[in-house]
Amino acid sequence: MTSKTILTCIKGSSAGREVLLGFAAARDLHAFSFADVLDETTGRGYQRRFSPQHSLDFRRYIQKPGSTTIPLTFNLRPSDDRAWAIRPVARGAFELSLQNGARVLSQVDCQHRLGYLADQDIELPFMCFIGLSEREETAIFDVINGKAKGLSKSLLDYHDAQLSGNLGTERPELFIALFLNNEPSSPWYQRLDLGGEATSGLERRASLRTMQKAAKQFFKRVKAQRQISAEDASAAVRNFWVAFAELIPQSFSKPRNFLVTKGIGVYALMEIAADMVCECQPEAVSHSSYFAALLGDFALEFDWSNSGPLRGLGGQGGVKEALFIIRDARRRARLKVANG
Image 1: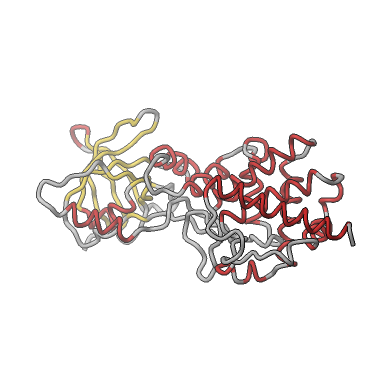
Image 2 (image 1 turned 135 degrees about the vertical axis):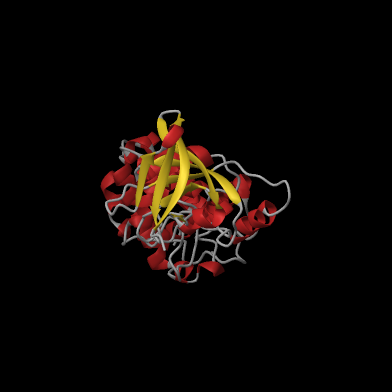
């Protein structure tokens, strides 16, 4: 029994990248390939999480008479163990030699088309990049799928962060959102949905895109009042959320019962955080105690639950109304303290 499988291809260029073009049985392409799904714990990978329904739909379709598909796109990852090799043969053809049992073809754009075809001999066209790095694969994936229906915007945001040379300057709002997700002292630590494969047991709260949009408004408002870096803004926001989680821990320990960690709560409370930062001297926000003191005046008595005054609010208009309600509660609490 041979230890290798040979696929006959032609070699050419896709714009500025060298590629192989060929045809192979679906079962072979499945056997030698893998989807590099983002692991949100380690940060490795870049693909979206697998959708069984999407893949089953394609399996049903491709077995029908007259069905077809555009070429499946792969990348031959660089390898030191000689798991693959390319050599020229007669009349301009090339042979791609693949070590049996080795998954060396990264599924750049075919994860769901190929997902449930492990038992099929249907011949499919494929295009294969040669030796791209993971970083280069990620960039190409984003170009191909940037406008794809159903692709998580949070996943694309995460890719932007990995590809950025200076994220704090280029996209401070994304820097802030990722800081909240990656900083162990943050109550949002590994809680934001990045669009990849989530760690088992984590209770999902808000998406990276939601937090990033809220952080953008926060940074814009604070930046208009004073000079502040993305790093200092991130620390201030972290301290705000630390204070909130300490005062109302159940909003994070039982997030399904509260609106704090849902979109409406994130957007509105990041505006409250901006209010508090703009009200004080810059050094005050370096301690969570500053935010705890201000939040303690009203947040403990406010009903943050699903049945509270923020119930049913959504969209941009809902955020404005939620913000009005929270600011009013804070104002009334201040008046109560002032009047004894």
